Length: 139
Image (cartoon, rainbow, N blue to C red; front, side, top):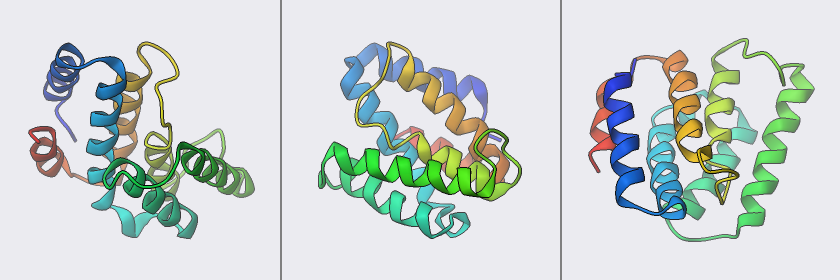
């Protein structure tokens, strides 16, 4: 599990140093890099969505509409499984974590930090990646 004190310190540091849009992008890049560690747990729709997110956040490619489309595809997948409300297994948790990087802009003042906290809670269900996440928070 990721240490919540370290996570809160990371969030506070980024929010203090950057405006909300840049902080959102920094958090999205962090989460994308984490998701690469568990890409094998994602269903095909999730792998495609992760490729879109990596292109947008890590490579500067694509358009925000592609993130929205990928997000809708992921929600559609969860709906089709009947898991749009409950997180029932690791695949659900991986998709829920992935959804956090499929927003081009923060939707509210605390959206980005709350998204990272939710991401961490879902990511913790996928295994112990705390060392890798701690290293990625240093970047």
